[in-house]
Length: 146
Image 1: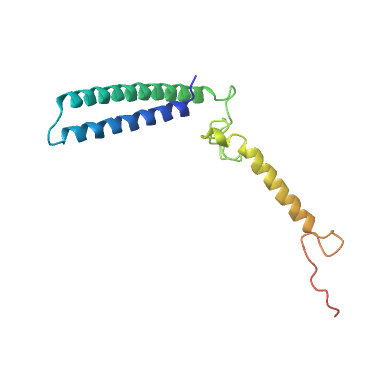
Image 2 (image 1 turned 90 degrees about the vertical axis):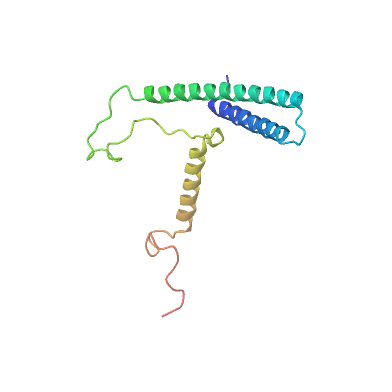
């Protein structure tokens, strides 16, 4: 089964094909001596491209409707508390985890977390021990004698 992104790509390809057929038909009709047989063949090709686009558009709309229904049904079994003072996000949201739109970005949040932890580790490694001038100071104040 094709994913919704595959269906959208197929719809775009059908739209591009329909555009090409329309341009070819317009060029044939604008010729000084129009060829009736060529125009008829171009009209048939345009009609086929248009029906292919309409079929692809119908499939995309159906897949979007299914996706919207799944998103609506993915809510929590137990209701979320709606007390804005007690919830860190202000009580708004559906309780459904965010999903990346592009399948190539799947798992990117793990990489971001690992990068943040590595950066934090590098920051902690540069700091001096707590007994040597404070935890938050990253370098000595002065190395010159007073």
